[in-house]
Image (cartoon, rainbow, N blue to C red; front, side, top):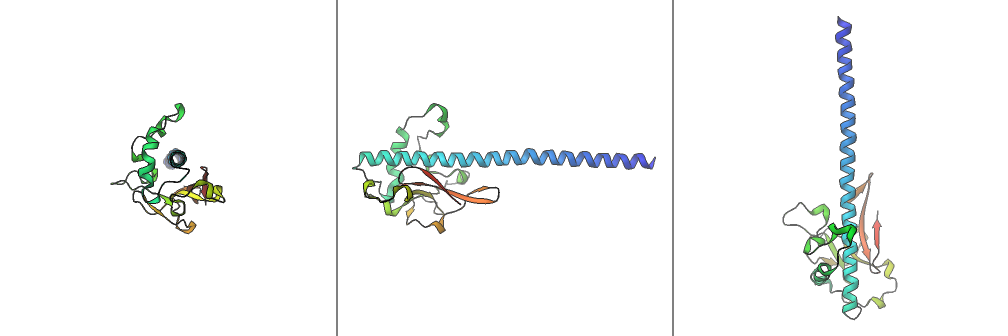
Length: 180
């Protein structure tokens, strides 16, 4: 009789361990899926901002927007951009484009992106290395139209992938860069 009780307790313990392991696997896959979705959303938002900045420069004598009101200048251009068929969820008509996906649940929504002061109203053709010059980057300043001098040491590491933290930025030539 005792061996039966012992076996049933062992059997129950094994079943609970297996159930806990399966639950952990399901939870971790859902968690990392949500993290990857936020990372994709952030990179797509930066890509839209870069496209809007390029459109702004085409309309204003090849100059970047002024840093103190860069979101205000880019917002109408972003709203006028056509939605492409496969990424309709990244079509923004209001200022939610400028809100970092990792900051979305806070009230009032902090923005989380900043414009490099060195590019304020500057001509694109005057840049020596546009592929190495940061234009829009994630920042610790959460205000609308945040701007300032770019420093790598001030970048927040919002995105975490397997214990390595990184941040996104878009350079003056329009391509997105990841900084670890």
